[in-house]
Amino acid sequence: MGIAIRLAAAAAVTACALPAADLAATPLAHASVRATAPAGVVAMAGELVNVATGSQMWSRDKNTELPIASITKVMTAMVVLSHGDLDRKIRVTEAAVNYAEENSAGSAGLHPGDVLTAWQLLQGLLLPSGADAAYLLARSYGPGWRAFVRKMNATARRIGMTQTHFANFDGLPWPTEYSTYSTPRDLIILGKAAMKNRVFRRMVAERSHRIAATSQHHRYFWKNTNLLLRRYRGAVGIKTGFTLAAGYCLLFEAKRHGKELMGVVLDSTNTDTTMRFTAAARLLNWGFAHAG
Image: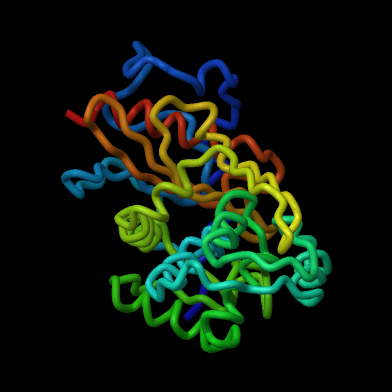
């Protein structure tokens, strides 16, 4: 399958950033909001849906195949959760730590020799976006990473993700930058499926998580990379992503006044780490104002 890259899509969009004050507790409606479409959403592709009704509220190139970076880890978590046995003990290896370091990837800062449960590694996967945690989970639950990735692709097919392929367990750009890809439409399917799992939903809603030191492992403190949880009232998840090819990406969900919206923005620039949160906030403000 090829990747459809549309280089001109983002150029026509207003690129001004929304101040942090506007991201938090913004009113549901503004005089400047247009009924036809949200303004100033910087992203190559994306979609916004009403979770309750399933109706699409907005989209841009929703069937365009693009790299998705660490949003991949949503599927990684789903495969682990489908197996269960979250009390399984997994030893941190030098190989896992080196893998994250050598790829300049997001890391849970794991210490070789520590023994952690799968539950704890899932938190290290989803909050700080740890490639070291992904490496350990894939090897344990495959068993072996190749078998694990086959399970990821099988799950994708089963839930209806028809334009998605996973080449690895974390979304890093190997064997090529475009080997792992999906579409906004498929990522909404993935997000809905994942958020139905109460363990997953609980984890991705955490702003941070602390694990006290024991005789088996060091102390850990992980902050969630999804800044929308701190900046947007009602945000409940779910996952960030970034590589140079994918740009800054965000799969997100928020609830206000009994309404629940889910959206995704892909390639919201590859230079401004905050623009994806600005884009998500603008989509959500517009969506809550027009959700009916």
